[in-house]
Length: 180
Image 1 (cartoon, one colour):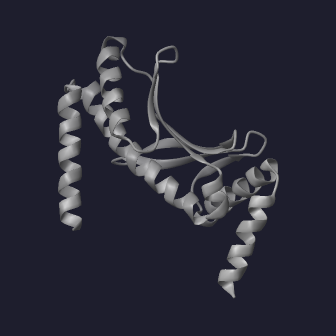
Image 2 (cartoon, rainbow, N blue to C red):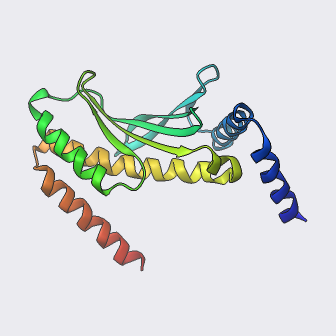
């Protein structure tokens, strides 16, 4: 009986207008944040939520989750401000990540002097499978942590982008081998 109810609910959601679909996903996103009791601010008019999650050892970062243009967006500023003398290396490291990432993009904003990781998914997936919202938040957060630590190594330790990426790939292979 539950399978039929779930199936009918998905058909109903698909038949709704674009605006109603955005409202449903927005309500699901707010419901998830409220149930998890995360430290966050909800901005109804702009349809976004700002949440503080740990990004490295006892250091928090602001994550932004938004619904607009028929998509579910997750954003995190990797660096709020960066030294201009590292601009070339920052672009190289961002390009390495963009070649490796399946979801999302690392953006170097030269005018604003910041770097962000932005993940965007079609609204249809969280509309039909509300539990996928939590999954996307987790994937975005985990990837953000890796990207954040890589850019910290570049800025603080002045490590070469190719070495940073090689170490990250090696660590991911090691984690994969351990889980199998």
